[in-house]
Amino acid sequence: MKRSEMKSELILTLLLCWLVPSAALAAQNYPFRIHSVKTTSQHLVTAINDGPATITVFVNVSGTNISSDRHWPVIDVIAPHSPKQLGWVQAANPRQGYSFKTNFNYGLGDVNKISDGSISYRIPFADGIRSRVDQAPGGRITTHTHSSSTFAIDFTVPENTPVVAARGGTVVSVEDSFTVGGQRQELLDKANTIEIQHSDGTIANYVHLAPGKAAVRVGQIVSTGQLIGYSGNTGYSSGPHLHFVLTRAVVGPDNKVDAQSLPVSFYAYNPPTRILIEQGMTVEADYAHPMPVARTHAQPTDNRPPGIVKADTSPTLQNSRNKNDAPSVLITFDVSWLDDVERRTGQPWWVWAGLFLLAIILVKAVRSVFSTSKRKKSYRIEPGNRFNDL
Image (cartoon, rainbow, N blue to C red; front, side):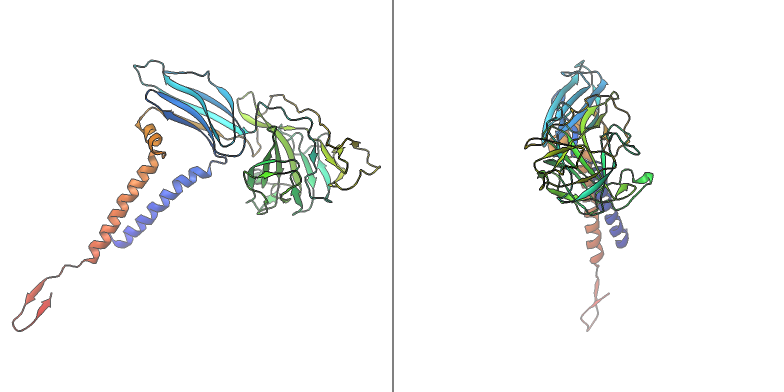
């Protein structure tokens, strides 16, 4: 093999070894997985949550000649940065082999928690910012047609308006790489978004944010009123605005974990006053002054924000088309020595196979370089002369 050909083959192999795991990682939006660990005669099915969000997961196990200590399917909640054992799977007839597969889907949030009805939310802009409400519950709805956005509110503000946390919590998702906005179908999942999970398991979604201007990172704990980013016009959008929606995790009749929107009550002024948001009105993030007397959609309260209408807990859902749908994953586990490779080494078999192939190519490349650099020489002796090279 020529030296140039060997070099090209080596580069191609390196690229393939990098692209295969990278493509797998790119398809995983959140660090959650279902893992099977083989013991002597059983498999332990475990949910592993390596991210900062509480996760609701639906898991079903089916297969041939299997028994288990759990009645599948199961719905479970996995705490942030934690593994959780879901159940054991073994052969129903120990004299025969067995195989099984695990089908699961998951979503952000805690399906077992009810939202805290005593909480009202800050208007999600820096102090002094005014905004017109273009879409809100009870008004003319044009795009908030799915259960995950029924109670969403669209605040019209110029691009690069400072957006703050409407309630304190943990940042569980940040996307600010998209740059294009418009009313085209291909932009439905191209909106920059920040998601913050609260102590009651609910999640606030801040959507259509400006590109490259997220002021928080995943896993960061933020407080009410803290800057998190800037408004924009990314994704499916008719113009610059902030789409704000509060959601909780639910499991639909199709056994899919989904997001269900919840009613939201906002507060403003000093002392805090509940604001009833309606389409067409103008709101102001004013937390330094008393409520103007002319305000007719406000109710004064004590020193803490008042309660809101209790969230709808109906589990009925439709098939979701929202970009934040929980991913569905199908993983098949067959009982074989390949399970032991990953269990003992921490790496799947294809990683070791790729490394072994790469090592062979490198050895051949080194041998080729050294073999071409060594030239064989022969000599002859002529009378009256020194050694002459042939």
